[in-house]
Amino acid sequence: MTNGISENALYVSLYLPGETTPTTAALLKLERNNLQEGGQLAYGLGYLERPDAQTLNPLHLPLQRESFRLPARLLRDGGALPLTIKDALPDAWGLRVLANELGGRLPSEREQLLLTNEDRVGAMVFSETRDMPPPAELQHHELAALADAVRRLQYDMEIPTPLKRLLLRGGSLGGTRPKASFMHDHALWLAKFPAAGDPLDVQMLEAAALDLAKLCGIMVPQHMTLPIGRGETAFLSRRFDRFGEAAQQRLHFLSASALLDIPYESSDGSYVEFARVIRRLSLRPGADLLELFRRMVFNLLIDNTDDHLKNHGMLWAGSNRYVLSPAFDIVPQLTNLGYQMLSIDGSTQESSLELAVQSAAHFDLSTDQASAIIKEMAGVVYGQWWLNSPLPALPETLRKPMARCFDRQKQIIGVGKLSS
Ligand SMILES: Nc1ncnc2c1ncn2[C@@H]1O[C@H](COP(=O)(O)OP(=O)(O)OP(=O)(O)O)[C@@H](O)[C@H]1O
Ligand SMILES: [Mg+2]
Image 1 (cartoon, protein in one colour):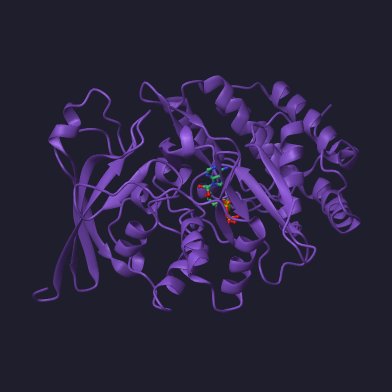
Image 2: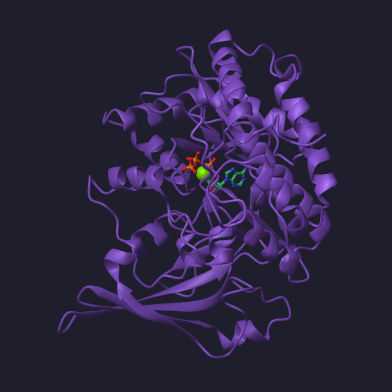
């Protein structure tokens, strides 16, 4: 480092379809000048010559020989990393796990990228040299032991060393809530655990919401709840970006944040803008537009206001096309805020079914079709949904707050105002 200037470089690799080891795709160079960070990203020339070369982001980092300049920005404002790479950083939970691993110190972004390769969503991995060691096989562990490690971390208690490593892998995924990776039935699953101070069983709530989403025609990952002792539950969701033996093959995933080039913490962006991306990239635009419309309506119906841009995304589907990933992180917030994190059409954050109907054309629907879909879904969600729930028995402690929340929500989003 001289005169406050320091440089660092990282290789960006992708697991290409069908492969179980990553292929180096690009070099990322960051330069720090006092409080500012700038840099560049360039695809390798050899990589560009491969017939199966995949872009890191078809809309913002297309395959090209020229390097991409990453304009200098204050570190305080997020630095120079493109949002495609930021997608790979852990969020609050992962940071907590990494800080524990580093003896309490917060990791740099470089460390965050290097330490979260194994289980991050999608197919991107980062390394300091061209070659990366293959990922270690995830040992089978009892879910209760994992839950205990997660609990210990939340209460700043000592964690046995073998469990620390497992925690590290779960922290690779984004998100705020406690989670871990779990091998079950030769497949990789994401396990979500109770967070300290939860007023009710959020894991069971998430499973019930996904069951309900499925009844509303929404594509959801295979999921289940399992007991972890002390009357607590884990929510398990099968990884939709991992395939093959020991889940070693990966599919590239891009969040709506990376696709729209909008930070997920911001209130910019909208379902309508995401629909435009789907129109450009999807292998099956008609089906995906309808699916996105259903997800938007479902979030309104069940009071899932936490529908930010990292809670939507697309998966690589071959031939330079993508498809909407199965739905995830769909949970009634039980707060009836009346404002969505992701706006319907960019004009307001309001949770309004009327606005949803007015936006129908962006999803290739007529307003009549949109109204019919909403009515059908409202019938499922506000009908006797607990009778339909495949969960053995939704406990009263959950059913009551959900029913109360849904009753309030009907008024807020204006179900009664829809013309018949
Ligand atoms: N079944 C799945 N397969 C692959 N990746 C998944 C799956 N479910 C979730 N993910 C990825 O893991 C990330 C974290 O999961 P999730 O959003 O459920 O966690 P969270 O902590 O509840 O998030 P938030 O902070 O938004 O509340 C998601 O952003 C998504 O990228
Ligand atoms: Mg999330």
